[in-house]
Length: 261
Image (cartoon, rainbow, N blue to C red; front, side, top):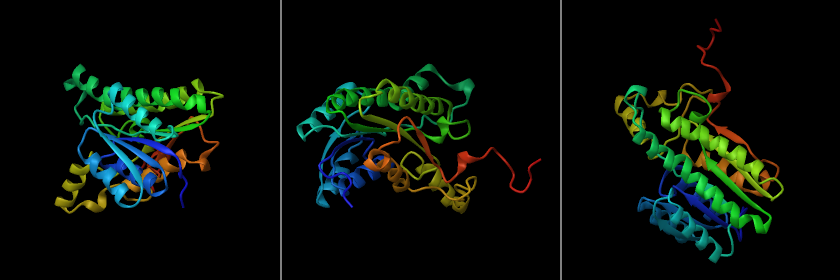
């Protein structure tokens, strides 16, 4: 199935994890992929797409930089025009407690996780608007829905991404551009790898994801599949939404199963 034949997609954070999975899937389904990431692994992602018969170019640069995003949009235009923008790049910022957080900690996380997506959303919308169509998908997190899934700056940044999606969808009313977000739960990526490695070393891997009804963690391909759906024509009437892909984690308040009191 080639849902994205003749489409051009920008994917940030494409060197690993969910972003790499997105880029590979877009390439496999016919899109020309502009893969962006500060890590050199972005070249491997683009090479893998080309090796499998797809079309891709890599930009190894800071995805939160307006200059980088402008270069990516210009490259997409040279390939025929930007159809899809995936604002996926992000950092965790760690789990520093409130008393020990600094303004610098907040600046670093918000710059990458919220200002970066804003820049891509703004630049993408500007070139999509004259064409009367386009799909923008941002990677938020269940940490942006409520407490308990990340550090304070990370959680606030992802809540900001959800608001960015909602407000942008309304700012772009009547343009034909859709803007949505995915909210992954616990997913094995480069960001979460230390957690997974530690659990495996302790022999407690089976406990990963134990709080959600599926009782497991996700693979990056599962989050990417939702993102690609939202970018596709199959989601033509889905707009301004933040959709959880978390095994059901966000469907419940904290509860001890079998004991409601």
